[in-house]
Amino acid sequence: MFDGNLDKISAYDAAKRLAYDTTFDIDGGGLTAVWMDLNYNWGNPIFQKRVGESLNLAVNYIADVLHTLYLQSETEDFSLTFPLESMHLWFVGVAITTIAIIVIVASTRRRLKQPKGRLIRLF
Image (cartoon, rainbow, N blue to C red; front, side):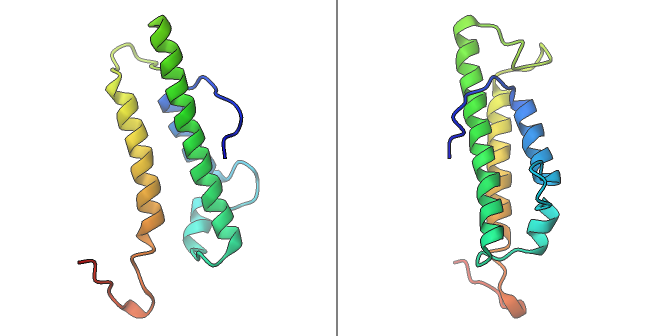
């Protein structure tokens, strides 16, 4: 769900904040990445809620980064988005793609495994 705000944030800072939330669960519920890994169960409503929160936060950060890029494209001032002057616009695309791949891999990694060592036939 959209958080209602479009903030100015660099792709680097967005990735850092998302990683921090996933690692330490900023909201204080103790539902960290380690907890999610140990309690992987799509039938568990607490697990479902935490995965949804993580995905929602990631999507909101992506929207914020794209908003920041749009605002800076109007002024052509990229200093806020890129702390180092030598960085190029492609870095943002790489950062967003990396975040998306991490989320997809994390959500599908466990689904491919079945109990009692049975293998899933993918093709």
